[in-house]
Length: 583
Ligand SMILES: [Zn+2]
Image (cartoon, rainbow, N blue to C red; front, side, top):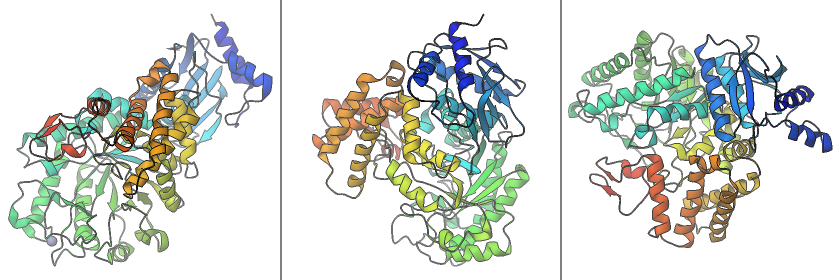
């Protein structure tokens, strides 16, 4: 039997014009439609193409996210249908369409993954106050960027390193709903002695766990290899340290010289072992990284970016394809020419002759985007990616004060490259930059979408209706002080006070589900900690300590640690202990 709620939903759904966005009319009629369209008891969903595992998973995600946010139950049935999930092979694989058909609102994906993205859009544009009010968004949407990745830097006992398989699965679902199609993790050789070190097994198990979570959602799994290997690598094969006059290229890790025959054999043998240990978990994308961890400045390897690095990357690509025949490759140019100058031009000259082994060129820097690919062109005429650093900028310890939304900064950086790039991998150290992840991934989907637009959608979906203006102002205040603090200028005390005032005002109005969401907690705690450290001038107050302890709990940090790098990702609680690191 169709409930009154369902009948009114059908009536409403049929009245919405195809292709229109959020508005379905004005004045009295729209208000009536709005009231009538709330489904208070049960949403009935017909799920087509259930033989595809991901389609069933998409239904479960939809059900979970709606039931978390409102009392409406979501049931699967072919009678009294109000919502249809289906596949339409006429659409491009990652595209989706939301229209009216099949007895209710219909979400069609060009593939199960496209359906997942369509459900993401539907969920974010629906409303949940007092019951489920289905989205009025109608239209077809297709991503512009082909590689919409996120790099989870899973090390130092940060959230990615510490969290459970269940949290990984849920978080991967959450960011996939925004349009992600690839997740990258690196094998953290920085912390591992050799393959016999128990940490090596743990790291492989972690990679395989993430690969599984990624593949179960129909996304691609990416990892990297370069010339940096284990702590115990023989001294005789180590690389010659690189010049780093700007001190921003990074020199961590234990790089090996690939021009040394023994070093070369060591790198290839370890890459082979890594690929063998990943057998059955499928590596879809292999990324080659020149610096930070990596590089060699010896006579035979230099200029590294267009010589030793290039030769080694090509050999690693061939080796990788012998294990994973469909493997795509990404050649990073991060920090090229800083110096040694001439790496970009050398790369362009080399790829002019032969570019068949590379699928994408990745470029980025700590600040503005490198000019070479924008002004001269992309070496090998290959698609270009970016690598926005969303985690560490002006934020030490990383995530140590809670959320760090930076919409103005990333809009400015995106505007430099939006006509040129085909996607990228934002660098992520944890969940505290979830807001920026959503903004960046939506840039990859639609280059013209603004941070403000994505943020408004994010706030409505994650925190509920009626708080957008306050949360936008709160984020603006937080970013003002993050930017001043980064530039070592005096912070704006009024902005710090105002952010906290807004956070408390929002907190008092949030529905229970949003208040319990770590996304809100991280933002709220950031406002509190900014007030304590900037206005109060101390992180030793009981309020600040309580806030940091809660962050430590959310991040699964260690209060006492033997990890020499954990202090980089742990809130700066005075009583926390790093036995081998420094606070
Ligand atoms: Zn060398």
